Length: 80
Image (cartoon, rainbow, N blue to C red):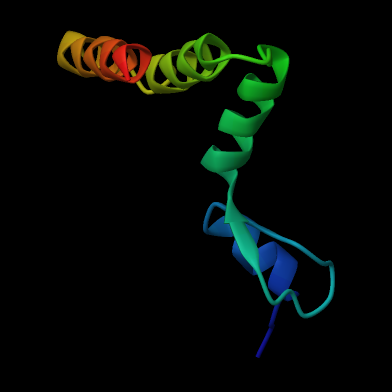
């Protein structure tokens, strides 16, 4: 059997292990991309989160319906 280390197997499945040996927790690489975008746009308000989420969804070719939903959610949060 030609086994590969757990960290390599996780990366092949789109996950990033939280330790190089025997990772007990793994995070989706797409979530790490989102966090990277979020920290690029970070500000002490809600609009940074909304802009980051919008960019993250756009990277997947999100449709206008998703944009409308985000705008609506943002409006509801601002009203609250």
